[in-house]
Length: 99
Image (cartoon, rainbow, N blue to C red; front, side, top):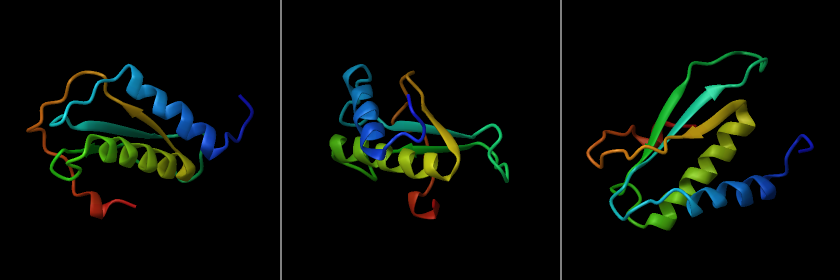
């Protein structure tokens, strides 16, 4: 891949995740961010959970995940998701407190 990767291509590639990663109506989606090696001003790893409570529509939850991943990647984070099922009672953080 040629760097930098265009946002449109990033969105297309991340959308493919949903072909192998099932998200049910009540399932949260967990996102983990790790600061990129060599990126100036290192920051601590972060975790974010997109819950059905905050995003009742599964497609909105998926889109929010992609939007946040692109924003954080642009800032210098590498973004990952957990493929293990996450309990719907898992406590997420307040999304409004995030950049």
